[in-house]
Length: 165
Image 1 (cartoon, rainbow, N blue to C red):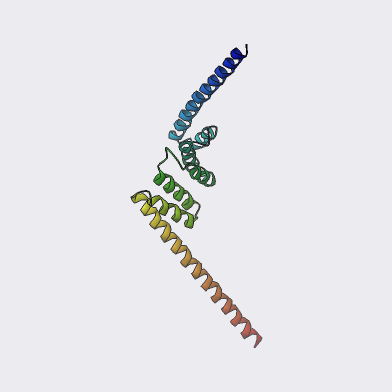
Image 2 (tube, rainbow, N blue to C red):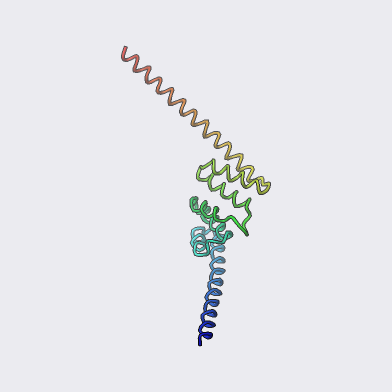
C-alpha cells in the first residue's frame, strides 16, 4: 500500500511539473507574441509570471520594460539576465542604452565599455562615444552655470557697494 501511495505521489508530482512546463511554454509564446505586436506592457506582465531564474527570460523581460519606458525595471532585469542563453555584448549594450535613457551617463559608459570587452560592435562604439560627448557637454554646462552664478553674485555685490556709498 505504501508503495502504491509513493508511486501515486511521484506520478502526481511529475504530472504537475509537466503541466507547469507546458503552461510556461504557452506563456512564453504569448509574451513573445505580445512583444512582437508592440504590446510591451502585456508582454512584461506575462514574462513576470515565469521563472525569474532563467537569464533568457529576464533578458526578454528587460526588453519589454525598456520598450514600455519602465527603465528602472528594465535595468533590474538586464542585470539578472547574465548567464546561459544571453548574448553578453547585447545585454550590456541594452543596459547601457537604458542608463542613457535615464541620463545616467556614468553607468551608461561603464556598460558600453563592458559590452565592448565581449566583442566589436559599431552600435555600441557609437553609443559609447555619444555618451562620452554628452557627459563632457554636461560638465562644461555645469562649469558655465557656476561661472555665470559667480558673475551675477559679484555684480549684485558691486551694486550693493555703490548704493552704500
